[in-house]
Amino acid sequence: MNARLGQQARRRIAPALFLAGLALSPILVLGVGPSDFKPSYNFYSPQDDVQVGRENSAQVDKQLPLLKDPEALDYLNGLGRKLVALAPNNHAEYAWQFRIVNSNEINAFALPGGYIYVNRGVFDAADNEAELAGVIAHESGHVVMRHGTHIASEAVLAQGGMAILSELLGQGGSLTSQLAQLGLGLGVDSLLLKNSRAAETQADEVGTYILYLAGYDPHAMVQFFQIIARKYPQRTSQFFSDHPNPENRIKDVDAEIAHLGPFRGKTTDTPDFEAVKQQMAGLDPPPQPRGTPKIDARKRPPSPPSENLVRYQGSKFTLDYPDNWQVQHDEDSVLLLPMGGMVTGAEGETSQAYGAAVSIYTPQEGSWGLVDATQELIESMRQSNPQIHVLQQTGMNLRGNPALSTLLQNESPIEGQRETDHLVTVRQDNAVLTFIFIAPTGAFESYAPTFDKMLQSIALAK
Image (cartoon, rainbow, N blue to C red):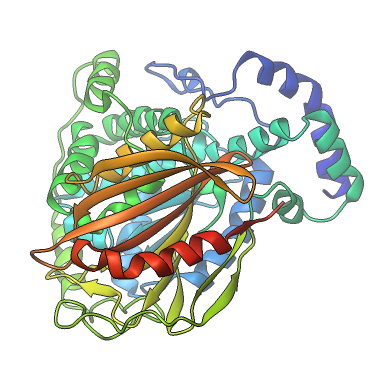
């Protein structure tokens, strides 16, 4: 950290560690005013949030396709700023910038300091402005409750608390480089974006408060989350990976509304929303993800995997894969797949039907038994794939690391076919590293020898 940040951090160490001893998860407080929304312990300042968000945003802007349509951006920024003006704990330093990701996937995320991204698919799926406002208000809740740098603070605590923080302070350098040393990184893969169920509950509470003050029916937020999970399962897998569904979501929001009192208004829709939605529908369709194979697996299957393997070198792991496969970085996952391994659905969404995918999953606080964390991951997957079920689960050893092998069956994105998935989970630092090997059930046996070789080649970073 620079000298100023270093002095601030030193002044925060003692009280922050004291608070950390009291609670390791966000404090959930129902209430009716800004003073009732209290972020959990944090080693960082709101100015640090803005710095981290700005540097992450620069990285994200390079990784994701952004929609540059001025009318849509003007509308989103106008609506977003109207909502965040009502947010509790809204520090003057926050940037509050809103961007549209040109993707049909239904997702949204917030970076520390007020950088909010909403996918084009959210506009398409939302039936009215209240639902879109609910998404923005929820993401604003993550910002003002400072969930991103709370995750960073937990990483500091887990790796030695005062000792590791003092060491980082002594090394100097940028705040971003110090977060990288904690394994948090930048961009769409950053663990700063992996919220717990407790954090999701807090964001719902803040979102409810914002919608209430803005005159929207606060129920629109949770209703939208329910509708997209049921109506668009293939387009929401990333959303429910980043936003694990809290228990009793509707009940908790109803309780918060009861504390707030009678509605001040019940705005549902506006002509501006309908005009922007219609105008966006007339734009060119979103681009296919970079490197997406053009062959459609619904028409003919991919070529068999090559027996010659090449090495993929990642920051968290290495593994070998067939040399006739391609590598894609799909937001927070690494995809290894053959030509034709992706399927394009009727609504334009793309899903993986063959190959392997590697990602990081951060379980909720307290779920550090690998079996419990894996079960939580599977339940999260069910939010967008309700047909998924477990066939078999056994313990295994992954290069000296205790791991869990889970065989799953699911609906394949190839119409009329079932899919078999081999999920392997292993704990790494404060998260679970997940490897999933995918093929239609009828083809899985022929892919199994390749999947076994890939699994045996995995080496985890130390």
